[in-house]
Image (spheres, rainbow, N blue to C red):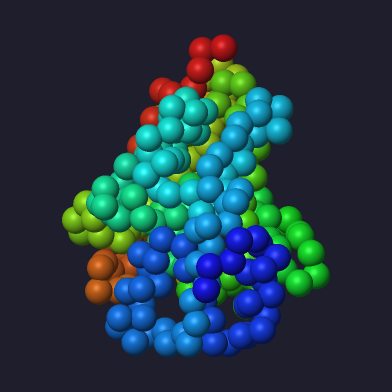
Length: 282
């Protein structure tokens, strides 16, 4: 099925509730179907619906990204590189070029993997998502959108249509880093930081972790260590340790929980330092 509007797609989802899945890039869905983890009777492609691809930026209102925008588009965007470098970081570390040409931002988020690269990045950016269903349109914070591994807080007859990201504050830098077994693998752990400074002092900070808990998470205690304080090496180290302590990693075939805790310290430390280096001078 290839609807030409969001409303038509929502109607199809409601009509075939429980037997239908949304198809965008298909890089997650088709693999799950091949492995027989998912067995939908119908697929509804959203790639021909106008308005679901592309991005726009306004210095006052921020960035809008359509849910069907490909990861490759984010990687190649000069706008993203200038204003949201952590999204460029995440795109460059995402699988292979072939996969990035197909995979969509909405698909990466709706897969709800605890270690999804863009879940961590968008959480750090305090992103909101726009969702459309039979009852109309609603906007929700991405924090709270993930309810468990592979589970999201929206109904089977709803579609995520776009991401709304606030405009960066003055003197703000950001960074994303990922640790995997090989460059194309899912993350053993990842981290994202958005840092706003006033001289050498932390005016505001947002720290997010992936593959560090059952869902992507904000490291609130680590943020509190830095907010309003001078960005010394000691303060950064304390924040990295706090992030590791509040994480809830689980041992998996990729890594032990203890290894992930140590990796979180390293990634948060380096993300903070890189975000500080990237801050605009004005």
